[in-house]
Length: 333
Ligand code: ASP
Image 1: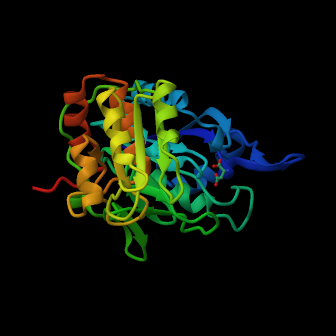
Image 2: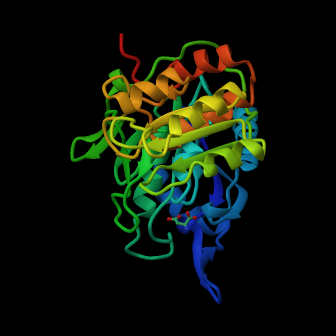
Image 3: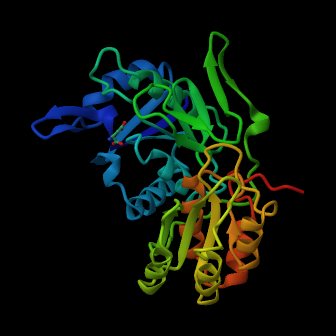
């Protein structure tokens, strides 16, 4: 029996047309039906519009509704493809990896760098890859782009123009397409750890700060004063924070004692943090900061939003954050 895939359109460049104010999503899924049918081969597709947004306009409330929608359709299809703008795609794929943890079907997010109406676009190739991954019966949340499939919580947009826009960070690709066909590395697919249960709540009181020489501590303090519950800090190198002339450790200590959850990661794209090496990292850990290790920025941030949407209990937050929930974190033993 042929497989049945649902394709949900949220907008982005793939569906874009040139209008007076510049390139914007304008094609409905019906306008793209012919192209989608061509790349699906003998797979049955059903299509629907969810929204038609440049992904800069996608916000956590959209993730929550999208996760609920996918959850409600999961038993009607062999897999689901989500067409999404590339700019915030990795945030969406990371958050969906948490909200849809242990989902029983493949959910594959894709987009493109050129509109599907452009004859030299990457759009059809990316949709082809996504649809065939969605028909693979391998459950999980994935990103398909430029003939490769990545884990949703490991993908990051690393190039703004090239077709090779996404990379899987600190984790092998799940699948690649070559002259050998689609090769899936099943050993790289995280095992489902339990029964699926939609978990689409989140906290919108989470901030992201990138450290730079010259940053003022009052940036941290003003976030606490404004009621932020969580902060993800992109620190230096393997996770260093300043403590001499400008003592950020005392500031962190105060915020953490006041109930804020602070996670520290690295500004480096590859290889993650290792905060127990330098004094600049150890002091932050002693102040009670959590560590992002090898998570992407997108995964570290959305994981914090997701956990703080479930609990305010510091011990629970710490436990959940240090667990590998969906393949986003390499837990060292
Ligand atoms: N600005 C577009 C978006 O993220 C870019 C793209 O889709 O490639 O919606």
